[in-house]
Image 1 (tube, rainbow, N blue to C red):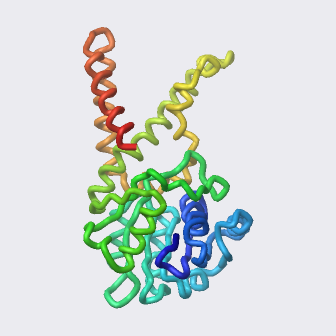
Image 2: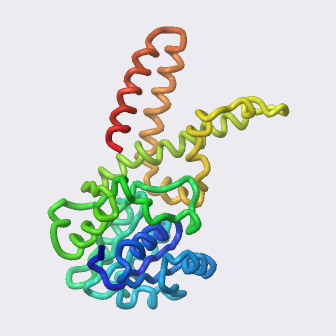
Length: 288
């Protein structure tokens, strides 16, 4: 299996960037993979065999790359896009893995111009509650949705088409939509669950007494519900800041729903809510 790219620069070799690098090494062994990150992260990426070499300077990392995969925090991605556009080869495809798209795509629209490198926004709906190159996995994208910002026709040919074809070979499922629709949907299905886990963890922690209760009585259910709480704030800070409007709306709807549950505690109306929740769970189970 090969990718339509001879040389790929991975900017940010943490969980997502490192996983994409490992996928390239596994499924496209002839592709040269260059990493750009902090020195100690690059050393670990080299030890894991995720990259062929690391570059301390951005200009060296992107030189000659026909695919530049930006897997940095949203704020850093926004900050670096104009420089990436200036440094990238004219025939290069630049794509990002940011969890929010409106701010990134707006800066990209100002930075990338016809006749130069091409930018295409993306967001792999894959991850783990732990971050870093140590958690990277070549199979991370298999079975996961991969949001692509634009029209499906763009994925049928050219540089974008080659990238989409490779994603499908990795087992990812491309989903085409615009940046606004992506951020609204991601707020509900990705960012809201993260904040729910943080809030629930806070309540349980605050109610835990000197005997260890209620935590010491907890079983698998609480652990499963709090899995996302293991994700660090450093990963989520820019995501929350760049999608605060949709998150505010989602939180408002959740608060309303919780108030409804609270009001129905002493009635049989909760049966309907359990049934509706079960139906959604079945839909999600069948989707995956």
